[in-house]
Amino acid sequence: MTCLRGASAIQSVLEQVHDTGLRAFIVWEPVLPTDWAAPSSSTLSRVRDPRAMQFWDRGHLLSKALGGPERFPRSDPVNRIQFNMHGVIWDFVAIFPPGTDRPSFTGAPVVSLADDVHRELEHVAGLITLPTR
Amino acid sequence: MKLRYWLLIAAILGIGAAVYYANTGGHTPAGQPPLSRFDQAGFDQQFRAASGEARLLVLLSPT
Image (cartoon, rainbow over all chains, first blue to last red; front, side, top):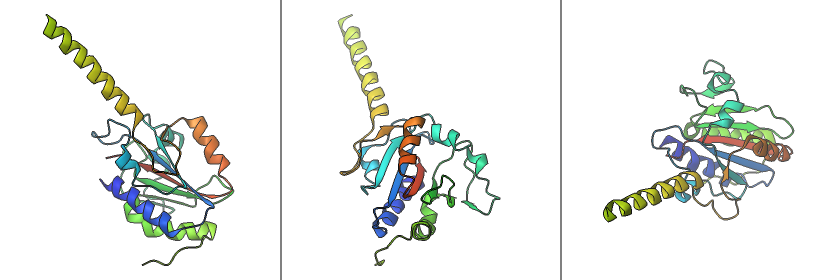
């Protein structure tokens, strides 16, 4: 459930960032026992920004390619990891500035980091933001 | 015998529908490409193609 709230939080951040120089890669993966099917239309609609692309990663291929949770230890102050991910990188966000494949920000769970994600996006891309209501 | 035959057909159709649903997923919102089944090479290509932009990567569980 925190993941779905995290998806909605990402949509809220994207609504505040109206620059076109931004891409969002949303990768859904089975983690919980209830995750036996690919995400439904209702789930996918949580992130409705047209700058987003959405993927279904049944085999946790991206998590493995990123090096697994061991790659992002909680003890590392650079990573804002706030829970033990146990084998799979999930409920996780990373921001990559233009021109580099090294993230400037990583963290989990997503829902608790929306403000930090917004700030970091402004920082890395100098994005123009709409005033918050 | 006939009932068992139809139950078997119904079970096969049910399993087929479940497998289809489990792998296909829903529709993405308007303006986005369709939901893609993840493959590393394709993803890397799209991720690199956007390297001139800020990129937000999010990994989530669907429930």
